[in-house]
Image (tube, rainbow, N blue to C red):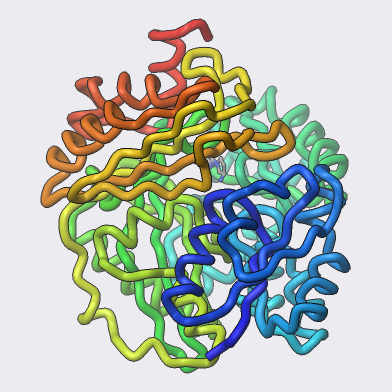
Amino acid sequence: MFKKILIANRGEIALRVQRACRELGIATVAVHSTADADAMHVRLSDESVCIGPPSARESYLNMPAILSAALITGAEAIHPGYGFLSENADFAEMVEAHNLVFIGPSASHIRMMGDKITAKTTMLELGVPLVPGSPGELDTLDAAYAIAENIKYPVLIKAAAGGGGRGMKVAQNRSELESAFREARIEAAAAFGNAAVYMEKYLDRPRHIELQVLADSFGQVVHFGERDCSLQRRHQKILEEAGSPAITPAQRDALGQTVTEALQKIGYRNAGTLEFLYQDGHFSFIEMNTRLQVEHPVSEMISGMDLVHEQIRIAAGEPLGYTQSDIHLTGHAIECRITAEDSETFAPSPGLITVYHPPGGLGVRVDSALYTGYRVPSNYDSLIAKLITHGKTRSEAIARMKRALREYVISGIKTTIPLHQRILENPDFIAGDYTIHWLEKFVARSGLN
Ligand code: MV4
């Protein structure tokens, strides 16, 4: 096992990884920008290194600075958290080139899944269900017309290097296809330096369901069931749950078996998440994320497993030591992402936290790096806390979330706690009856948007 790990991230996830290291008896190195000198992840780590100015490009994305920090402190491995360098194959390669361990998949698997066309082609060959679409890159408008006639309109043009919703264009009919194709290519080239696009049939009211997996270096692959991440606004997830209110245990087992067999065949290693759209009883793979995700705690709550602990053990070359039949998913978990934003307008609200009092009690988990007197900087993502509740049933998890949100005191800035309180009172939410479009309509109905 490693003796010292550098955590190349900030905020709640840096603390989350640090907690796992502490429990494993591993020393931690924090890195931080000048804006984060007083951050909780710096205060609680064994050592810390300032890696640059506030701008993420010059600090948390600064590969030479992070590698130097690891070499100077004698860290043996780097955990990238989520965002920043977590899905950067070049960084993973550089880490390994310096005889350090990247706590994540191989650079080649990161690269494979980073190209959405390669990811889909790979999954197709492995028998994972996909949305009907182009077999690979769409290189001409004529090819686009031919495929669209075959799969029927509406269709969606997506960027191969995209993901997370960037660079997508819908064509409702033949007359819209030319501009969708042309604009998608121009946007893809500008945003990603790669004009390659592909086509899918457009699903008009899907749920966004993702499957959490772990794989060791010896071909053992397990899954932890699904998360329903349909409640999102502008591609930012707001509230997630495990399991999905729409999925039966038989569907979960079947999808889990397909996916774990597929990842075993390609020799995937460490944590991963396969994203699916679910509509009319059918799952369609769209993308794979090769990192730990923000919402991983809901899977931990229903499985009782520490996924970061497992990521570190896998990276250290240990076998999982258990199989799918040892994983028991019990009860239901919900995560509310609390951001430093106005709960109606979503205007950013950074600033000084004057009072901080987190909730507690049975089945309540708070992943946050806030403290009284902390100043939320304006330079980074607005996520300040994840409130997670677990219950024997979904209704128990909801009741627990409502009472935990009432207990939570975050004064001095605006937060999205009131938004979560409104969602949790809504009959559609309570019934589990929602798609990826539900939250935006809910916000439009009830707020200033
Ligand atoms: C789709 C889709 C409908 N049909 N693909 C957006 C982000 C990227 N991960 C995939 N996305 C979508 N792909 C087909 N064939 C609708 C979306 C989509 C979406 C997906 C997941 C979560 C939120 C979303 C919001 C808008 C659109």
